[in-house]
Each structure stands twice: as structure tokens, then as C-alpha cells.
Length: 111
Image (cartoon, rainbow, N blue to C red):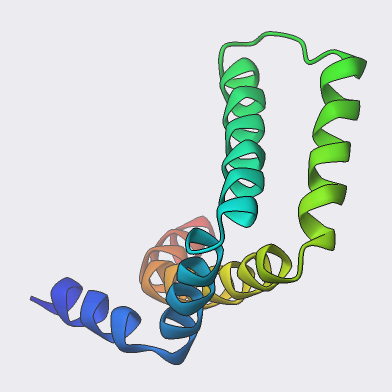
């Protein structure tokens, strides 16, 4: 029940509302949407290679840099990335707070 309350609180937070609006702005602009999807595809491809233990080539790293540079220059995508980062900070804070009892428990047992 508490997890559902937390989910609702996140969904109603200003950070999530701002992210949703920024996402919709990108999705409603065909050019921005295509750029953003290319960016996400590039990210996923590199992550999959890493998870499979495959080496990422210099060419792939350079392509990823170019894609990042391009999306950062687009106002709406840059805004979306900023809003996503802000929500991630909130989620990281929540994660740190909810794992604190375990850290205290295990930290106390190590002493």
C-alpha cells in the first residue's frame, strides 16, 4: 500500500508533471521525435553490447557522441533530458531513503 502511495506521489510531483510535458512536446514535433528516438536507439544498442560483454568500438563511441551533441542542441530534447535528470534525482533520493534501514542494520552488524 505504501508503495502505491509513493507511486501516486511521484506521478503527482512537479518533477514528473514537468517531464511529461517535456516528453509530449518532443513527441508532438516530428523532427524532435525522430532525433530523440535515434538517441534512445543508440543508447540501447551500446547498453546491450556492454551487458553482453562485447567491446564498443571507437566508431560507435564517436557516433554516440555526435548523436548526443545533436540532441543537446535541440531545445525541446535538451529540456526533456533536463527534466528527466531532475526526476532521476528525486527517485535516487527516494531509493537512498528507503534503503537506509538496511544500511543501518548491516552497518551496525559490521561494528
